[in-house]
View 1 (cartoon, one colour):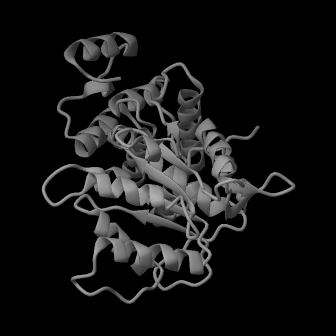
View 2: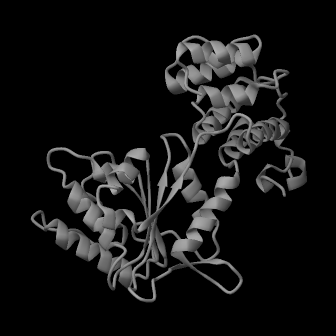
Length: 333
C-alpha cells in the first residue's frame, strides 16, 4: 500500500521540483501530509457516528439511534502538537460529499469550529451562529437562547456534523464559567429534533472534564492519539516522509540515519510536532541554498520552535548514547 501519493517524485508529476524556485519548493513542502494508521482509525470511528452508504462510503449525515433518535459523538484526545487539527481537516476535506461551512458560505454540511482559549459556553454558541451567517445577538441574550438559535440554524441548513476543535477551553473551571452548563450544552447537541453528530477535539483535560457528567461522557466514543513509538510503524513513516521530501526537493539525506528518530525525540514523541519540525528543517535548508539537511541546522530549528538550549538530540555522536544521557537529564521521549 502506497503511503503518500502526494510524495511521488516531482518529475513523475509533470514538473522538476528539484530545480524549481524557493517559493515553489516551500509551497510544495508545506502542503505535504504524513499519512499514518491514524487516518484509517479516524475513518473507522466516523462510521460509528455518521451514516454509511451501500458501498461503505461515509455520508455527511449523522447516524441516529432508531429508538431514541439521538446521535453520537467522538472525543478526539491527544497532547498539544499531536496533530489533531491536521488529522481532522485533512480527512474531512477529502471525504466525498463533505463540504465545510465557512461564514457566509452556502451548501456546507459540516462545521469545523475552533475554540479560542478564553471562550465561554455562550461565546461558542455565538460563534456557531455566526458561522451559519446569523447576523448577531443583543447583548442580553441568554446562553440558552443563543444555543437554541445556533442548533436551529444548523438543523435548517442540514449540517450533519459539528467539529469543536480545542473543546477543552469551554470546559475550563474558573470565575464566569459554567462547566456543568457547557457539558449540558454538548449533550443537548446530540439530542432532540436538532441533534447532529459531534466531534470534540482537545488535550487530555477534555476527557477528564467529560467524565464529570456520566450522561454526556457515555455519548462520546474515545479516540486517543498516543505518542510515536520509536520502533513502531509511525516512526518508519516519519523516516520515509523525511527521505522522500529530501529526494523531491533535491536535498541530500544526512548520513546519520537516526535523523528522524532525533526529530521525534526532540518533539516529545508528538507526531504533529515532529512533522512540523521536519518541515522547518527542510524549509530552512531550502532558503539557505543548502545541499543537505544536517544536525546543527536541526538543533537551531528545535531551539527556535521549542525554546530549548544546546544541541539536545542533534548533538554529534552515537544516538543511542545521546538519547540515554538526555533521558537521564529529564528530556521526555
